[in-house]
Image 1 (cartoon, one colour):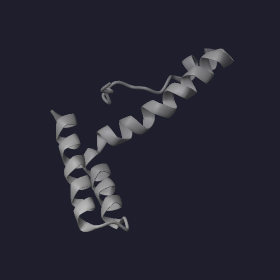
Image 2 (image 1 turned 180 degrees about the horizontal axis):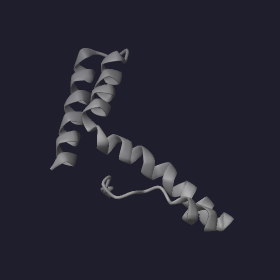
Image 3 (image 1 turned 90 degrees about the vertical axis):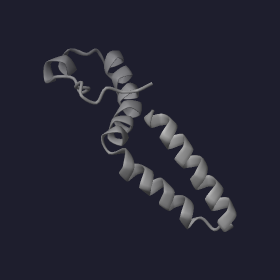
Image 4 (image 1 turned 135 degrees about the vertical axis):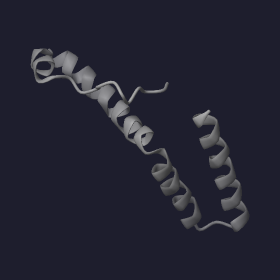
Length: 81
């Protein structure tokens, strides 16, 4: 699911203070998933570059690294479309 990073996610102080503990717990669970996705969507190339760097650093054969990088590129391009 694509997150709309142009829409505010954080509640207002009033909304937060009016949440029951159960609602607040639900919001925390949602925020735990949503906030990292929004961070990646704001700067996808930087995060993708870090992921490629992690693959290159692995102690594997060059062939395996190339295959994984190729798969990551295809996945990244498909997500952008």
